[in-house]
Length: 168
Image (tube, one colour):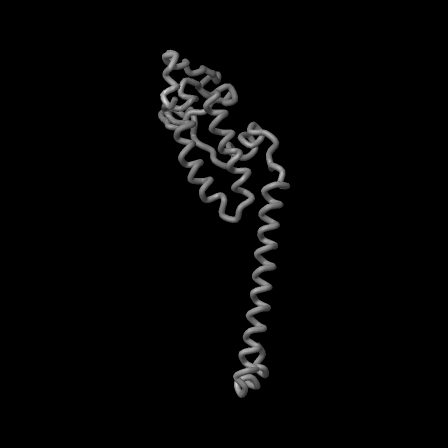
C-alpha cells in the first residue's frame, strides 16, 4: 500500500478494508505461484537431473579421495586403511556406492550435504578402520609394494528347513 492510499483510506474504513482484502489476495496469489514454481523445480530436479559422476569409481577417484584425504599406510599411523584395489572388496563397493548415491541426491538439495556429511563421518571409520574391509591390505609407496588381501569369508550354516516359516 502506498502512503497516499494509506492516508486516503484512513478516512474511510470501507475503502481501507477493500484495499487490505485486495492486497491480501494479491499476496496469496504470489505465494501460490512461488510454491508452484518451487514444486515444479523440485520435481524436475529429482527426475531430470543426471548424475554428476557416471560410476562409483569415477566418484571415488575424482571426488571422494581428493576431497577427503586420510593418512594411510604411514609408519605408526594405522588408524586409516585403504586398498588401491578397493573395487575388489564387496563391502567397500556397497558402502561407497551408497555414499555416492546419497551424494548425488544431496548435491541437488539446498542443505542436502549436511546429513550426507554426517553419513560420511559415520561410514569412513567403518570403511577405513581397523576392522574394515581394507584391514589386511597394505598400501604402496616408499615402504614397499601395495598388497591386496581379501578378507576371509565368515562361515555360515544353513538354517533348518522350516526355520523361516515361523509366520505361517
